[in-house]
Image 1: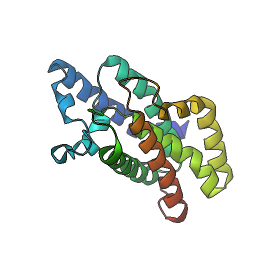
Image 2: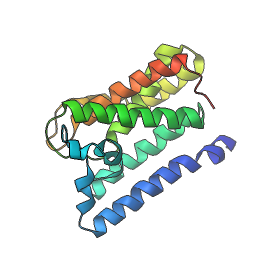
Image 3: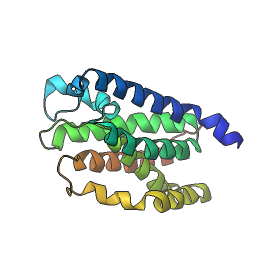
Image 4: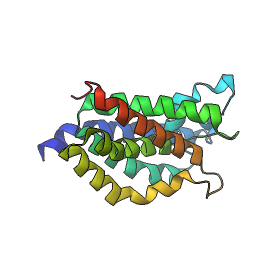
Length: 184
């Protein structure tokens, strides 16, 4: 119970920020969505960082809120610095992959970050090979194993590229975290 009290602050803050931005975006007719990530447009490079905080509608933000909350909490089991450093890495590296290689569209939403956290949790079991990483990976696969299909282009209007590059960034973050001292 002490873990939850200690670590709930960050996921609750993130959700509050996401929802605050979404409500503001809604109140201005979703005009903030223009700050999304548009691949290969130099004047939209900022979208690498801003796009995870923008959502197309209430269904979109609701579908991202619960997994972001849970996966953030799970990653926080390895420490705040671990979570924050890897989240920044996932957002920047995954977003850069989208900016460089994705189809031309306005990519918005936290799902790339979510897929990155998922990849980080699962790949850490392989790279770290310890009991805690294995337990976390098992839990994450049990809860969100079906997410893996989100990297396929099966739904129009959904950035499978964001999912794919987020996942790859999460796996790379797990590989790098294995040898770094990023813990507490």
